[in-house]
Image (cartoon, one colour):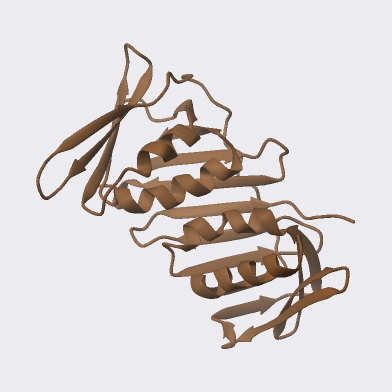
Length: 251
């Protein structure tokens, strides 16, 4: 029914790690031009979407485009963690057992190991793309994004973004502690666009999840508007795309 071959298996674990921290269970969609994985947190405050286009895959064969299925993302991550630097990952359907076979093959010596994901449900919710209208957009290197999240962890649980003109202020306050980092074009932002002054707050723990895909992405693009969801976009080295949406913290 389908066969997906992904040549960077060791990188895939960072993607599945982020997904599994959002929810144990998610959806896989077989599109005409690639594979989409997506899921939402149980409390509906976070959503993650990964698109592996056919161009980013070594092989992509699907008999019935549009097929959706429910999968155990946490189990997929446990398998992906076993991938070595030289491994290629293959996903195939076992129609009799209604399960997914995950094979890791060492491209140098040809040894393969096959794992079976738990039985799947050949159905799933329809993906609905969130259409946001951000008033602030900025891009930073992944290393700086990770510094931002780790700095915030020292102080508190809520990160506030304030943007105006040529600056984005990152603030975290708790009791007698405070953290402020002013982000400006070139210091350290790569790009910044502010349509109007905007302020919004987000859970630091939700942003921590985004550190996982940032490990293999060069840059992170963040987009938000006042009291609206934050969108984080990662363009990964092989052409894969990952987007995370985080609901605002409203006081």
